Length: 262
Image (cartoon, rainbow, N blue to C red; front, side):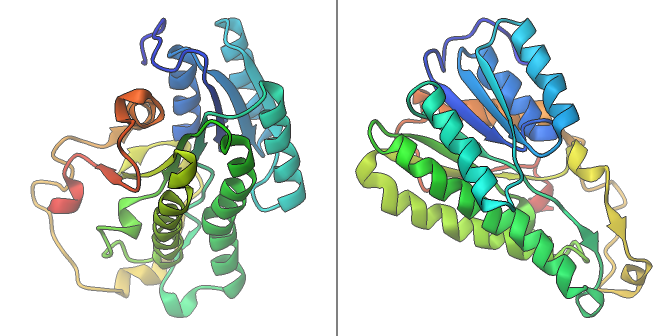
């Protein structure tokens, strides 16, 4: 668990999407533990209330807002509320995402393909678009939660839509880093590997995947350090949100316990 009482983010205001569970939840707790006021955005109202109560109980300045990144007007309203709450935003952790149906390309329903891209890629674009005006005056740090499956690993069969969405996100973030540098807004990417999180709770795997691709055997396993935790990713997010990384922008940092190199 992240130690409390830190000051790396003292006086900062952070907005987190997908804040109610998994990596988003861990990052929200970590930001708060380092002194930030935290605006939580999630579509899951029940989980949102749970983390809001937890943070409020620990003395954190917190604002919880229900919004879906697929719904542009509702998302803009939530971000504008978050921006007006403490007169600006210093940190964005754009984290909302889904894995979706794992299936061969030829079996992928077009509506499922569109849903995954709408959440992971277009949802991130919307979030970025609406946050920028709140950061332009004094700069800030934007952290985009991507994946090794959009950058370094392309043999996890069935994850084509997910990988495509994350690859697009990577390009979006790097374009944004260059464009926003004039405003001292840093934009960086996190590439998690296998992380134990809520994201994996609703995976649906098509049986047809058993006949897809070249089979690879890992007799000693493919996770030398085991699977990662949301808290480990959150510690990296704190680094990128803080002034410890004040010359880091347009970069991608892999956090996968060497998984993608095996």
